[in-house]
Image 1: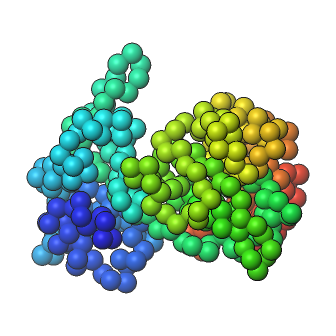
Image 2 (image 1 turned 45 degrees about the horizontal axis):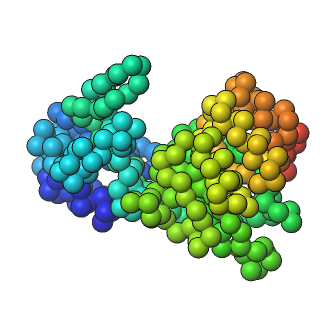
Image 3 (image 1 turned 180 degrees about the vertical axis):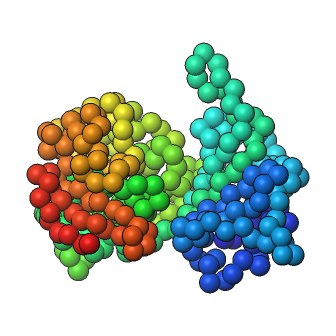
Length: 309
């Protein structure tokens, strides 16, 4: 929480200091909304921390202080981040923004009068992907799709797989390989000023803030990755780029929002990739037993490789 505390107003820091220590380690989000109670999401449940026995209401001064800290008192310098609706701060924490959107020629030009902030606490879990090595590596890393609803740990798992590929595994006799990450929303590597904030090993090249389809082709042409890592596919352009990457002999590991293979098959873009056998493994995540619970691992014929639940 050290990096987060650096941008929070003293009032909010004081309220959070009284938050139960047993829950502090499980904080996932801190939601700050003007004239509304401070909200903390911990272990999947919402809480309204109290200030002298009463839920603390966020003031305009609190929000102004937070925005100035995020923008370092220069909103102009953060114009692109504001257009995307979020800012990534040191430590890899992402701050989502909501307010009045200015539209020009059908495109978002700016975000003004910001009234809501969602600080998503980044928690790298080094080693969380180790148990999957027998299912995802067979003389090479298999093309893999990670499926799960929001906040089931898709990006956390994807990040650790990237670290594994970059570092290799001596016990499993897996050599390190070059990894190209297209980090469109700055969530995988959480780069600040172009430098990844998470531990990803030494053989990683990151395109931060770049659209996935364009970024995949850029990395293939310029950085010759062995494996590509991208998050949350869904556009037709993504599917085309994935097919081109696989045809070029590059392995690919990515994520998609959904409950299971049957769910994502309802989307034409993803179904097309499944139909051509683009993915050799599909990991279905849930949070029934906590974030990152694996429901099952399946192959592209929908046969279970391993069932966890």
